Amino acid sequence: MKALSVRQPWAWLIVHRHKPIENRSWKTGYRGDLLIHASQGMTKDEYAEALSLCNKLGVELPEFSALERGGVVGRVTVTGCVDESDSPWFSGKYGWEMSEATPLPFMPCKGRLSIFDIDYQVNTNV
Image 1: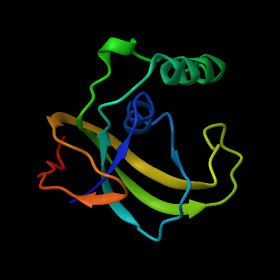
Image 2: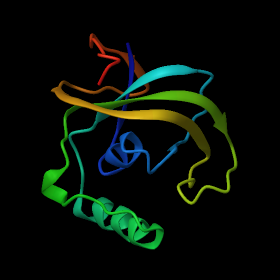
Image 3: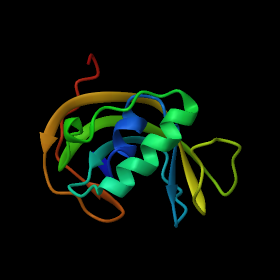
Image 4: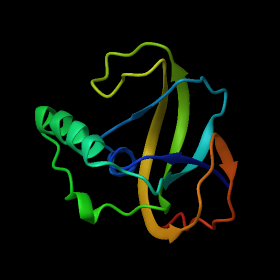
């Protein structure tokens, strides 16, 4: 399967259907299922920035220490890529539109830059 590394807490927000768009500096033509890999790194400042936005939008974010990192945390379907959006989650040069987000059991693994291949069997009944 294809996967994309996303820093926490953004990965959690995506797979729990709060954040339907992922900001990137590059556009993609990829469409279809994509595993969300939570990157190992997350700073207190990144968490505070996300928490501030979540508070404005009425989204309850887990505590810093409760966010899993360094592995697959969920799955989405990439449906499009835009260069502008009215979404409060859009802040990048490009926004990857995502739907059908689903959390998955955590599977530790290393992430990579860009979209990468990963051996992960997704149980569609989860």
